[in-house]
Length: 445
Image (tube, rainbow, N blue to C red; front, side, top):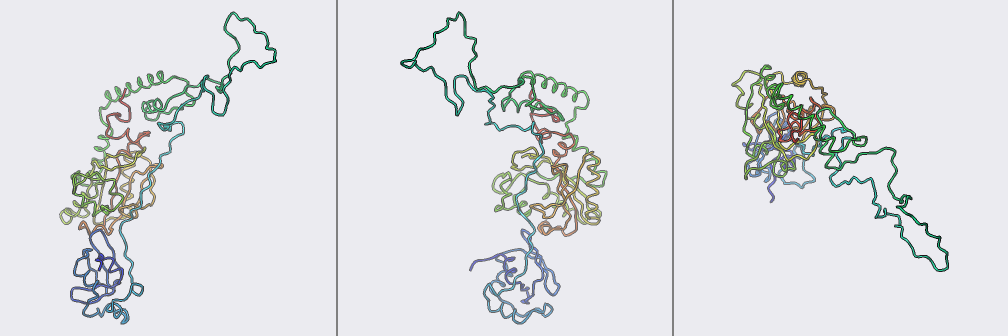
């Protein structure tokens, strides 16, 4: 007989057998990665491990019980059906609410002006055809021998080269245009400063001239930053946010970057999930953290009943994911996560904290409702078409796996995206830890 998980057996029978052998009807069942919270028809609520080999699983699999619970008031025919091990089509079922939806997250496509789009490397820029090779679909002209019986026209003597222009297939243009190769376009785009734009279709300067002008401007920008502040924008933003949350009464924590992969399984990202492919594994049992949530969960549990209500903590630190390339994604990025547990954990309070932070940073935003692979329903914070943050109002079923049983609110922000929004950077890499850019300005000069 195939050993099915406990949640599958409960869903199949709609019944539960307690340790004293009493048969209960199941009113509601919520499951996380490790545990199940079961509410009986009689009002009793219990939390058990979702195991294939537990006593409860064996009892349900073998349909064994002593007597029904008199408070659940199970119908006689339902009790008899369970005792007789009825077929699947006749069995009662109860809906099991899963806590995680692992639909692939759609990457946000930034709105890039057409003239700034970088062409694919394989595209060729070729506006002219050779004089020697015919264009596709045309015939190359050759000198045919004089046919017999015809009188050829007498040849004119010429002392110099012929003044008659050769026919070509070069399209006529009203004005001279400068052409750039894909590599040249990429180079020019990398040298543009924050807020600068260029139209290659209208540009009349040559590549070397344009590169020299932009390189000179970037050198001036770097010298100006050295004279005025000498602060890296990413580090400065981290210090600014730290000061903001400390003043708001939050305690700063620092959790390990290298974590057990078992933490990711508790977050609903097991070996069989597609999201697991984005995790950088270290050995068999460890990985680089792709999010700050595991560390915050552990701190909330340990600070509960130690710190005054509500418990308020935050963390800023690096995270790692095998993200797809794009203007808003990085494989190494910096996250801010803040969390409050206990009283005043409402959506209004969550939106108030988010609003105070972004107003403090002078970043425009709007709040929309969405869903997340890990947390389910979320509150997304958007800047134009770029997601700045995903926020959650707990509790959620996943809390059971971390020993957290109180209401909470929390949100996570990508610091590089905050910089991209604040300074109108063209690419997220300009805001990241980099050897090519400093404060959004190219240093490959």
